[in-house]
Image (cartoon, rainbow, N blue to C red; front, side):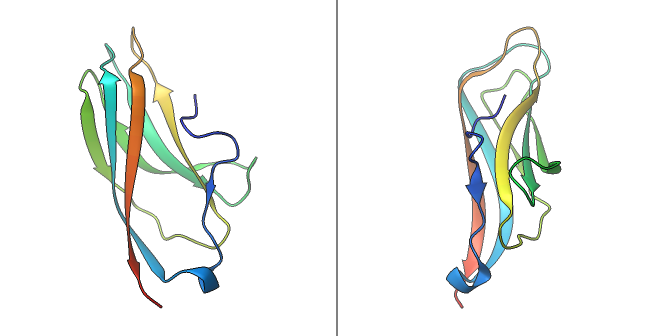
Length: 105
């Protein structure tokens, strides 16, 4: 299940921003799930193309967790945050924060 709509968030053209350096993805939920609950941050060069996992957050039964992002942003890439593994009960009311440092151009 995507936490962002299929429209996703898209990296703008490089001429519209400075250099992006991804840092960490933080996941927080209102109600913790049970069992194995995994959240991933992924990207694709097209909206409907294959996605590449850039960070995996092992949330488990916790309400908060984080993971480092391994990714060099490119113009026009789409970004998603999605639940990929759900235990007996899925976490509820989840949000994801993605830290990206921008060097001014």
